[in-house]
Length: 559
Image (cartoon, rainbow, N blue to C red; front, side, top):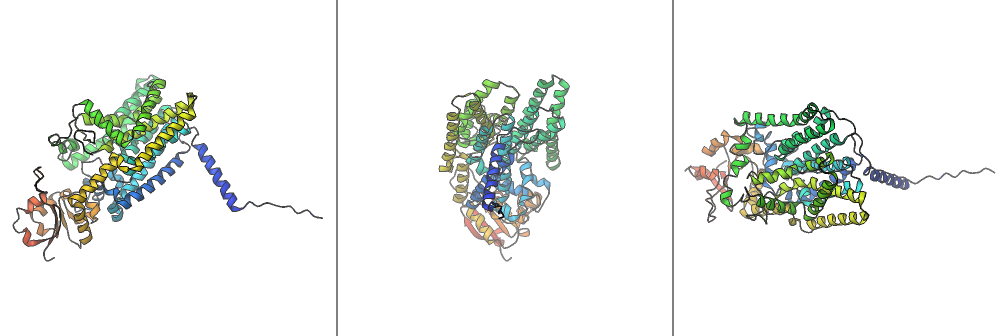
């Protein structure tokens, strides 16, 4: 009698389930693995998680219109697009008001009119930045010897911060800066703490290049480059006690930032005839802020106490008091245990942008205001977000200290996780707890109340061809949605002045803002109102087709 061998075939669902379990187990183990020379296990997992958060946030923000709330976000989109879509296209359209890297990164994304008009372009760049910030913080924590719980806490602090997540759905520049900041410090951390003696070329590529990108993203990047060069020299000296080696490594780190800065100076000279146009030109920050003290702003200028008070409240209303307090404890523990050794220096490097913002406020180069400042207002509190990676790493270090030393580590770690979760819930319950979101909400309300949004939507919906004269170079143009080559505005230079002098010869549409009455600020309307007021023939050639608050839209009679 033959024996039948019974073979058990595992069902496909069981095979898939086991595969998933195996992958989850491997991923969980990777998040606690020690970094290799170049690779940091678990990085792709963090990138994937951050990508999901960025995608969900982008969908919500774009559908609600919040992605286009900030005029600056629309301006960044427009600056990028007008390089190719303008009556005067070219790289000179990058201007000098903002540093160029964020606009250059947006350039390929804004070629789609839909992406430009809806803000999807900004959400794509912001989403990539959020993934870069999250994975960079994770990699720094791992190279500092922080294990899984601390690494994940640092990432959690990034991804549960509603201010940063919201900003990452817009075309604002803070997320881009933070991405390059974290990338540069991650490269420095690898070079500093690697068991292998990394070459000057590796330092140049993995730390210097991101520092150069940060330098051309926001001015905080200039401070990062300066301090980073000094830190590299110090670490190199500690390593070999060799002056030539220290100079060589400092030069390697600073080379790409130096090239980037040189290019920016040459660009400003070539386009504007002044290599320092960005610093002292007509549209520089210093020029735009000349009249602010007379309006009650910059009251903290020259007063350290008021400066720190204003910045501290911006930090509380963007980063959160829980994260700040945990970070302060982490800073104390870090200093107590490590002083200013190489590990500690890498952590403190992340604080450079925050220190720069405080200094810039003190000397009057940065404007910031919140409901605890003088005067009470919502303005530029988002600048404080650059402290988030620094605080995240400090809290991660605190977690690792509990793992290493404390008898009550489970209780301590549980309380930290609970506190961060509570902070995240506080933001979600009312997004206006975030000064960044509250400012965006106020900006949208101002556009509605002033009549600007209604005028923009009318023009976008009723436009049927022809050029447009408008005293606006970017802050509302994406929302209108008409290609930029149809606009005569200040960004095209002499052509704009010619259209102002003789609109009927150039444009079919005129969009202007007339003076507002009774506001006491000497408002005389925009440049177009002033120009056409001197043309007695204007109303015989144009008819008013729309009125909304102080905004008027005219169309040429006959064609």
